[in-house]
Image (cartoon, rainbow, N blue to C red):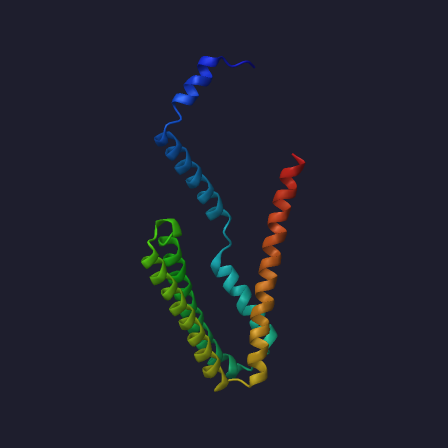
Length: 168
């Protein structure tokens, strides 16, 4: 195929800032839709996490009845803090901040980190009233091993996709 210079110049002329913005917007929407469609089901992940923790802790019926409300309440609070942190990070792009706003943003980040630590400490103290310390240590290990499994699963799925693309 041979394209004429006129056609090439036409494309240059249509490459205005507005058309670039429109192209970027469309591309962003397509990528977002693709990522959203591939996002794992949160309920399924939560069920897998519950099963993993239950298996690792070997809770008695009485322990489980007391443990899960405390644990789930903490998970909800941690998710709210995580969402709050993500929203702040997304709103505050460094290139759009003044020095004063950046300092305020850093202080907010420090405060959110403190809230996360306080929340985790409260949960551990509450759990000490319900479970022996050994089971709480097992819980922390179970959370880490679950997270590791999820990351490995993610890597496997995405390396397979990339591998498949290279062959084409």
